[in-house]
Length: 188
Image (cartoon, rainbow, N blue to C red):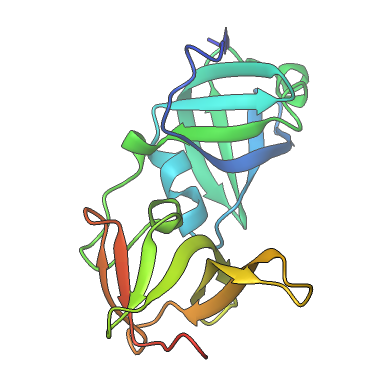
């Protein structure tokens, strides 16, 4: 059943996965555009037992009854959403999943959400900054690393480094230590 949620009842580890774009069919299914590309975008949606929905200040959640990949989107049925009209009311809601419900990954795989905020140092120990975001360029992911800098006007600014997230440059990712070691120089 769709349940109203408060900030206190919202999971602390909720991660935005996608957004409801439309109804699907006549029996209350919704179509979700996942933020991640390909099948990876739906893995958390397909495995999560509960979807958390947010639009403006309105927060809801519901058990996921069923979900499947449909082209480049995910379609899902939530408990308490019985028909197309009810599904249409969910358009525009952002969909969250508790991080605890993400599927397990292989040892050399990472969810982007787990990399954001990690410290990046090169193999000589030089601090390069912190991962602010990741970019998908089609061929591979790219770390967007921010570091304190000075602008042309002499005022403090934020610098940015883009480091390909591939084995040639990324040597180790230690999530426990919150650190990524790369073969990258500060002046690149």
